Image 1 (tube, helix red, strand yellow):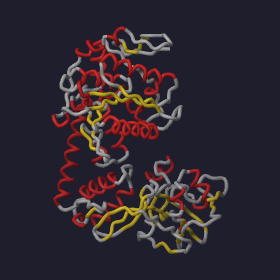
Image 2 (cartoon, rainbow, N blue to C red; image 1 turned 90 degrees about the vertical axis):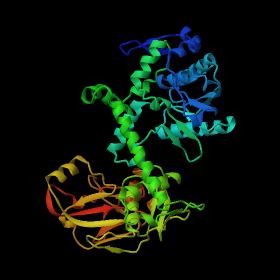
Image 3 (tube, one colour; image 1 turned 30 degrees about the vertical axis):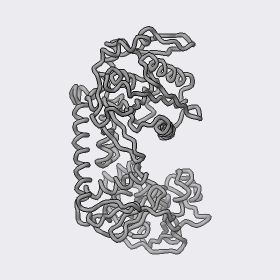
Image 4 (cartoon, helix red, strand yellow; image 1 turned 180 degrees about the vertical axis):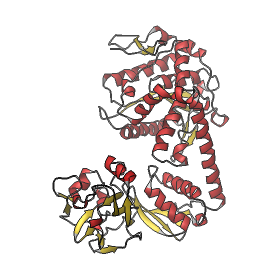
Length: 487
């Protein structure tokens, strides 16, 4: 089993050790000397003289980062290394930890190791949560609040593409930022982005200095979206966009971050400030540009721990901010209120919708649920999108003209069931929501839409099979849910 790998010039990997007993190759034992061949990386003046942790996985990026920081005499005395073993790759994960420890011993840099309690593969979110918990624990133990990570220009390009595709705002499009403040008070600094270094620069630098690193084979698997984006870029990007395309992406991300910062400064000048009780004054956002309201509410929700909010939830909040109107809605299981020019989160739960039947007026948005019913034409283009499944039923569905009539809604009742589109029979609504992993605390807040006492739709599920569309048609019924607490 290979413990250390580094590529030839053609990018293929060669084995440096086949021993099952951990032992460093000669190039690792002299790494303190060979690291001096790398260009020094620096830190901003405000970080100099303070303890700085480097997150090191053992891969090429983080090994380059550690070595290039360690050769800077102004930084070296204050360096320490954090390595978290995700325990996701069996013995290979263990070898990663041993490798990082040996590198740190050779460089004379303190190294602190952590390990996930569970073993085996896990989601990116689970691994990130465990890693961040380890970082937080180490910050308390060793009294530092600066962590350097090995993000580089290729990471910027990949992140920007993925977030553009999902319609992210300025905050998402400017990530990963060179310097980032976190809610718990610590800072993340990304020296490789600041130095405008990409993957190619990193690999060439390590090869010239004969510095080994660990390869994680799972980074090549097309299971994760980022891996698919990376492979696509590696195959086509330079030919299509030019050899310096990553620098262009990074420059655009910088400009977006400057625009975000400018909008937040403007908002502060207008008085959009959060008080000691966590209440944000948003009265000045009435009739202001949508971009300003978007940045303000996204920043506020992020500070409240709701950084994953996007899409229709944000759009609805922004709409009310710009109109100066009140609203309350459940966002990621938290109740967000905008009332009398103030925005805040409350500990109270959103009251269940109840079982009383209430009518839905065509063309009028229902303020209590965010439901909207409209008569529309399904043309060839829209039919093609529906046929391909491009429009998921989580918040928008189309039914045949036969569904046009007196439409009502109510909260969910025990025993509710209907036949969803494409299903061979009826199913309990409760089972459908569980199968779609709708959180239990949100299920009572989903409206049930009915026609002639029959359920025709529950948001997050397909519409009723009985009112299936069979092709382009005029007079179809479109149902939209604009208060998607689970999206």
